[in-house]
Length: 263
Image (cartoon, rainbow, N blue to C red; front, side, top):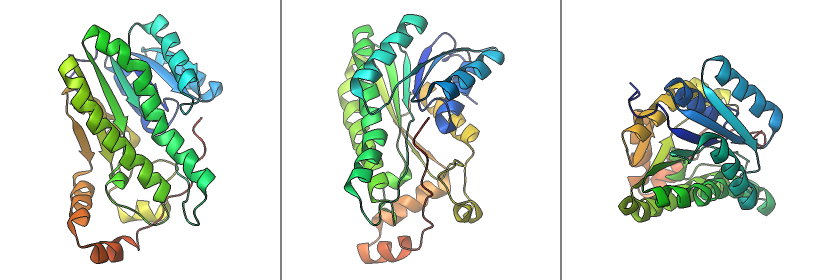
């Protein structure tokens, strides 16, 4: 159960809020009584997502920006704060995947710029207000892929490993000022970037179930949220194996599909 007493009246901003995990988180937060602000790159899906939340009885606003552009993220957050109030909870969910083999530096930079840069830019935009108020919660969507390398995923895994390390450090700095930081490490979530082979392998989590775990963890102030349990256990086990054995095991993993640039 999502702790219902936490969310009513909260101002919540979500990047990648027009699709996937981000949209599911926004819907769940709005259903629990929060005012939600959606950030993504393209206006049309943002308008549609916000309208759907309002039609269900929730409060939703939106602002378009590229999460990789720090000044635009700051402006978009400021715009949403004028309409929704100071941000109580921020969720950095925007992300993409691009195949990293053969390696292309420009493509890798795009993945890292959105997946890690987007998280960092949102944190830079919301933390000053949270720190001045002495309260707030910041959540970043990393991945179990940030714990172990996967074939064809060098840039994606690196971007998620960066998110994990960034949020670990941020948590140490922000906690004394009353701001809690949560790192989410999901396994395979059913989005367009996974393959049919991964779906057949099992252990796939729906976006709605992922959002439930994320919202529950944020409300409880958990520093890390891992799911599903079996995938989390396997990742930790793989990390503990000798490199030669770990490489042999992981080399046969199905590769992710390339995802479109986030809307």
